[in-house]
Amino acid sequence: MKNIKNSSLARCAIVAMALLLGQQAFGEKWDGPTSGPIKQAAKKVLFISQDFKNGGISTAYRGFSAAAAELGWDVNVVDGKSDVKTIHAAFLDAIHSHQDAIVLGGFQTDEFKDVVALAKQSKIILAGWHAAAEPGPSKDLFINIATESSEVARMAADYAIQSGSGNVGVIIFNDNRFGVANAKTQRMKEIVEQCKKCKVLAVENLLISNAGKDIPAAVVRLDKTYGKAWTHTLAINDVYFDAMNFPLVSIGRLDIKNISAGDGSNVALSRIKGGLSQQIATVAEPTNMQGWQLADELNRAFAGVASSGYVSKPILVTTQLLKQIGTAAIDSEIPYGKAYRAIWQVKAVEKP
Image (cartoon, rainbow, N blue to C red; front, side, top):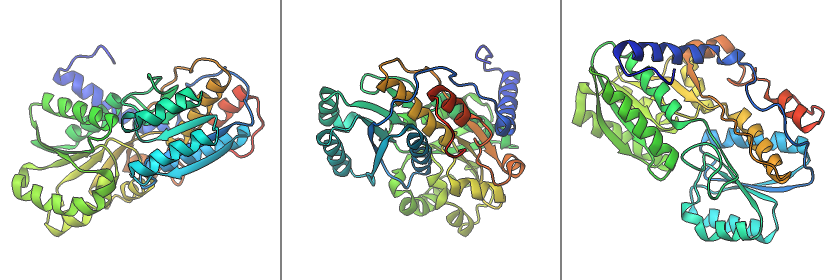
C-alpha cells in the first residue's frame, strides 16, 4: 500500500482498503510483541490526564489501570481538567513522592519543561498516551503510545471523499495546542485537496475542552458563510460532534456528514451505531489495548530494556461495523491480554 500513488484508481483502492480494515477489526489477530521482560512488580506510577472529558484518555487509562493491577503496581491518577497549573502541581507531587514513572495522558511536555527536567533528573521514567505528534520514543518520553496520525487522518479523509456523491466541501475542526491534532489536520487537508471534486472550506481551531460551548455558535456562523458548499465535517476528536447534531438540525442542515479522526469515544460509538446522528464514522484507536501496551512498555523501561517498537493500528468504525459486533468493544477480540500476560508471565485476573 505504501507504494500506491495518488491517481484516481489508487485513491479508490485506498478507500476500499480503509473500509475493509474497519469491517475486519473485530476479528483482528495479535500483531504485537511476543517477547519481553517478565513483570517488574511493586512500582509506583502516576497517570496525569489532560482532561477526562476526552473519552480516548479515560478509556486508555482504564486499560492501563487493569494491566497495572496484574503487574502489581500502585497507580494513582490526576485529572488535569485542561488546567496547566493542576498538571504542573501533579508533576511536582509525583517527583516529591518518588514515583517510578509518570504517564502523560493526552498532553505534551512543551508547557512543562521545568518539571519534566526535574523528573528526568530524579530518574523518573516518563511515558505518554497521545503525548507527542507520533508514536514511539522521543527526547523526553521513553515511549508515546498512539497510532500513526497520518494513517488515522487518511482513513477519515478517504471515507469523507468516498461518502460524497457530488462535490465535497469540508470544514475541519482542530485543537492546535496538540501536535498530534495538528498532524492529523494537516494530513486530512492534504488528502482532501488532492481530490478534484473536493475543497477544504476552512480549518477551525476550537479547544476540545470548550467544544460543548463553542460548537453551536460555530455551526450557525459556518452555515452562513459557506451554505450548501459545506457537505462534510472532519474533526480531530469525537468531542466536537457531541454538541453538533442539534444545532445542525435546528438550521435544517441534515445533509452534512460528520467524520472524526479519533478517538472512538463511547458517546460517539453509540450515536454512530444508532444511525440517527449525522456522525457517520470515527477512526478509533484500540484504546483499551493501548492501555495494556503502555503498561508493557513501562515494564520494559523498569527492566532496563528498549521499547518494543510496536505501533497499534487504527480502526474505521461505521454503523455497519458496530451492528456486526453488538455490545463488544471494538478491540475486544484482539487477544492483547493473553499476549501480554504470556510476556509478563502472570496469570489472568480478568479478561479485558
